[in-house]
Length: 144
Length: 271
Image (cartoon, rainbow over all chains, first blue to last red; front, side, top):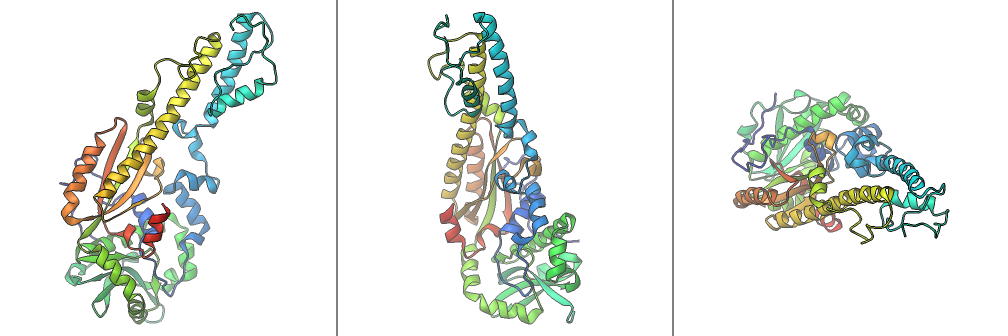
């Protein structure tokens, strides 16, 4: 159907090992033709930003994670690298349980003790601390 | 091609070698033609308003397959035009006028903008550079050897505490890796922008889209003098080897989508 006028110019940069730098990546194309390019008011007015379904679908396809979140698409939360919060919270819950059990076993006490020195901006740990902070740390803890 | 026919606009150029458009077909498979006014050449094709009128167009744009085919056709024509003229201003998808005369009016109305855009683009090409950070490699490189080293209180507590602190250290290493990658991306952009006449950062692409493993920390566009194209490629290669776990990808040459807008100065300042 159409021909690509520009040569692939494969001589440029061996950095794209996969050779996919010819504009074949649909995301690359959509990102540009929908969001870039000179805007000229034609006679047919279609505001691309007003198209709801398009917007949502594109969130799946081209959008940044941040904007996708704004429209409530959060499939990436299954991705272990991107999660940050969800997955780690589960882990932290598990950690907390284990930690409490270990603390009980080691001290022979039933009261959970608070972990200190683990409180910076790290959110999941803060949650642990926050929940445990209600219990005063016993002064008789022999590991102090 | 009478009343039910609109004109889909692809790009506006000057000194266009129209022979290069021979046989070229655009959206919906329609042959492209040119509309000229005093040196400015608009490349257009006829579209049926039953498909490309305001309402049907809105509907069709919701159809991802239709959108994909249309976007590819649009890009293919824009790319061809860019290769057949000293400069071409790509237009945003779905710019439709009611006939050649209306296109001509548009050329007259927007002449100053178009002239200045063409002046900026002449002799320059847009390139894309993306950086992908491999989270595992970055986190591993940054992970502290001993957990609890941060507070200097690692000896306190029992096995449970140690476990928690170790876990926390892992999470911190990951966050730190993320911050480092982000800072590195800023650095990359600055270095690449130094070679460019204009530079722009686009939002990072979704990993699902690119099919690439890793986190897209930089999605930049660079308008580079054609004489400096090799320099840019060399810089991408050099910078790509600088940090373990961060890979660079050069794409292009692109039509100057990212640098066609007249609002570009404001946009750039905002980023």
